Image (tube, rainbow, N blue to C red; front, side):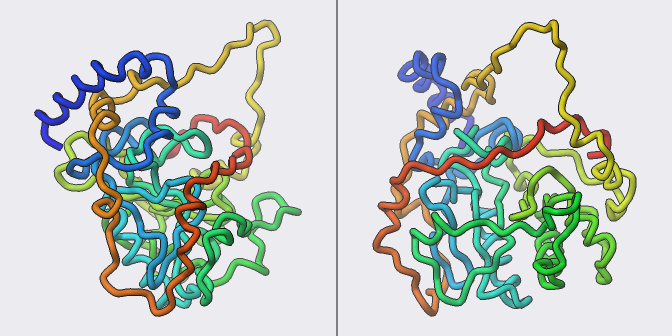
Length: 339
């Protein structure tokens, strides 16, 4: 998107939708967008504070992937991320990961804050991949809504991987995701990171990209860096040297990250402030105001058809369903000194 187009779009946004933008939280504005903007692809802002122009959708079905939870309408991303997911799906299948991958949330059609579930995923450079392989028989749209997640943890123990579920193939798939040059981080549960530190016997060059974080025991989160030439994209600090199997990991196995925040009994209750459009980069108003891309133009088709096509007759009906809320994600994260 050119500077001229962004400026023109910004003026239109302020003129036509300024009043609504000032009264509605940004998550409602971006959550209401059903299609991406008709513009060149551009991530704008940072992973947890931004938006996305010119997104494309991961097709709901491919030869080695399926998109999950279609009702959320969160299979949109930067073309570089969508291409990476398609390549990764092939590599995962070649490693013995079923018939490919199940892809969870990527981003909304125009990125931005979501109504529920994520703080990041705002600029189209993040994607969740389930710790469940794609089955040989394609899942129906309804199965993709109802299929439960499978945790890799033994919930009877503190931060312990369940050896009945975790396999060497799980480890190879996570490390494959971390191997691509454009991938900067792969987020997993601290217990999974510890398991990799203890058992991975292959090349450990990319193990440092695998980062421990709250949750992420049922899926792993792939994050790519800002694409070349994306001048409005704010990069995250580079991962430090080493494999990450050090004090930064040991911190997760102390009480500090899991302790409930201390409350001042004399403090007055403070209502959380909603993120408004004005809190995001100015270009995000232009993204919201831009004309929508046609559905056929917004989807990147894979090069070869799947051998067995999944049922598609109910996909549009599923997309129109009200999205199901996610469970609570756990305690409020404390500041981390290591990442």
